[in-house]
Length: 109
Length: 112
Image (cartoon, rainbow over all chains, first blue to last red; front, side):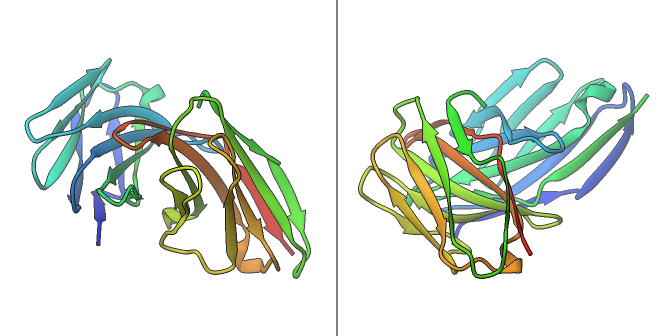
C-alpha cells in the first residue's frame, strides 16, 4: 500500500534561517511526487511535481529534490510569508494520490 | 486553484439528512478525487475516478457515494449524514500521467 510520512510535524524558524522538510514514501509505480502549500482556510496550492530520482525543481526560495525513498523541500532564507503547511503526496500506478500528514512551518520575523 | 470549482462552500446538515457536494473542472483532466481534511489527520482520500465512467474507493469511503457524471463533474453524496462526517471536503483534478493536480477551495460541512 502506498504510504507517505512527513517530518517534522511542525517547524519554527527565524526569518533567514534555512532548513529542509522531509517526505519519506513507499509507492508502487511512481507516477509523480507532489509538493503543495496550504494556507489556513484554503485548498492546497500546487508547488512541484517530481518524477524520478535525482530530479530537482526550484521556485523562489523553495527547492524540491527526489531520491528513490524520499523527497526534501529545502527552504532558503525564508520570509514570514512562507509560513504555511507543506504537504507531500505520491501518485502511484493505481492513480491514487496519497498524502502525508504535512509539516506546519512558522517563520518568525 | 484555477479550474476546479466546488459547491456549496458551507453547509450545515442535521443528522440523517442527505446532501451532494458538487465538483466541476474545466481542464479536461481524466482523474478526479474527493478528500476530507480533519485537524491533525491530513488529507484522506474518500473516492477517486481515474477516468469517466470509473470510480474506486480510497482510504475512508464508508458513508459516502460518488458519481462521475461526465469528464467534467464528480459529485460526492452523503446519504445519511452523521456528526463524524463534519469536515472540510476537497475535490481535485489531474492528468493520469501525473504532471499537475489542482485542488478546489474546499467545502465546509457541519453535521449537527
